[in-house]
Image (cartoon, rainbow, N blue to C red; front, side, top):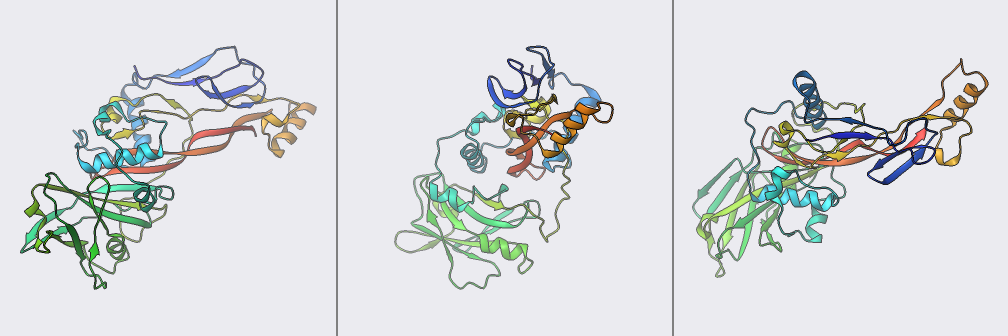
Length: 360
């Protein structure tokens, strides 16, 4: 049974927000009974209540709806790559058990992580080519990026991996509608991927100065002969793009944001969410609770308004209530999920977890 709990600990005077036995913050005096807890059983929610919860989380993630029979994401290079990115960013959380097969040995170098702008990006999305064709000694790759725009583009790359032992000596690509005369030279990553920096190609498309993004790719043998990618056997490819928070000038799906009014601790996602939330496998949101009584000391993290309100209440309780313990700062968290376009998306969401409480 998957259960999310509000936990109120009262081992000493004060209300604390905690995960297990790790106290986050003390705030105000408590009148609560020792060891009282309030729990919400998400696994047992039925009907309209469960539907409303799912609807709110979908709205928060910016997904209009989940397609019927959504299924799990394929065990492919793009999915594994995104799972590793997530584990690099959120080392103390775990993947949804339904996606444990995506866990693999680390293969990203420090330079690769830096290039993807892991520290700056609010959203990182993987995408697959829309169409791949062969023309003479070249491979032509076309992209459909309409459903992969999440803000101002920071960086984008295209990765090619060959399944067999036979690989080209080097790979070059010529972007469509580009002013650059020289091709993009792929570098060989630690894991054997050929990596092409296609940031300029996508940025020109986003700004409307070029048409559908197209790459003409040539693989070279050791003796310098040109070949299409198919000449070296089976191969896989995918793109990755990182975005800052913002609004694109290109048309895109409307993404509504919901205010997270109820702070809950979610220890596991219900079966409906496990189809499209890859990670985390639930999370601790924490909560703040209790009244702040006079005198307010430093550890109560009180605002000036709370101090004045407490004094007014002390003089005349009928004029105002006591100040209350409420979140004073919140932290963001990252969610790895599958959107309606079957893109694997790693997105940072603000104000998801209580970091500190204070008297307000």
